[in-house]
Length: 356
Image 1 (cartoon, rainbow, N blue to C red):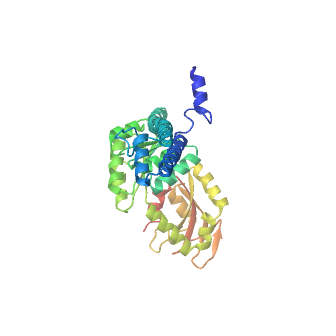
Image 2 (image 1 turned 135 degrees about the vertical axis):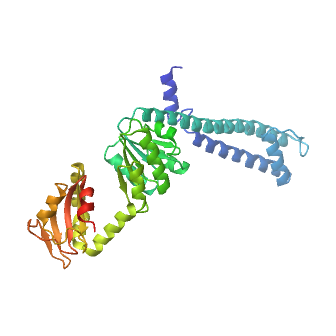
């Protein structure tokens, strides 16, 4: 039979390989019916339920220990012959369905992994995501939505299976292993994001990845503030502290609820932020602390010191007054909420200007 015909037969709803699970269910149901009917037949012929069931099981599995009671009447012989024919036939079908189920699952797993490895080998200038926990799941979803090609490295078997179920390319392995990173294409990748909840592991992954690819952009997650310096020293280009970001967001909502809702609340503003992000810009609301270097300075002076890294679009006074499109001569006061648009390198300028 031609290969095309074989594939067609397997793909048809009633084909030979249509549904191993369905074949298993059918086989089990058929055997249950045979056992119940045969047991009932021996019981109606005068045997006890225990003897009848024992006789049926021995006959179906062709053990052949001997007859429980003499089979010397046409009724008993008819029941026994029917049990042999239908029971043995059903067991053959059930065994075949079980072998089919196991074999096809193994083949699908093998060929699925091979196909996935082939797709990973074809990736170039892609992103590697180390970890498929809470942050990894959200990151993968956003990368897919943005059309970015990426591969996930996850050590936990359950999480790796979940990633593959969602249609992501995923390698199950330890991201601190150089062989696993190379298998994920670290030598061809443009960015690696290590988002594991363990700071020490993120530091080690950063060291390993930087040693393998000096030109790789590495974005690392940190839990403790003191880990940021370690990650940067290990070779990370950028460090993200989710706890710190969450605290800043809560502080914004507490101190400047109106402005914070305006910046982050509406879907229109979120779309606007995505457009800014695509241009390498970010919209932020930052508090001018009492001991901040920008307190007492004009907006013009602050923007001049930032050297083009940011510009101020709004100033929110602690009393609730919001100054949109402020004049360059506006003086920043302690406790002001300063809404800025900054470039990708704005963090460097913010550290010197807004820091204490």
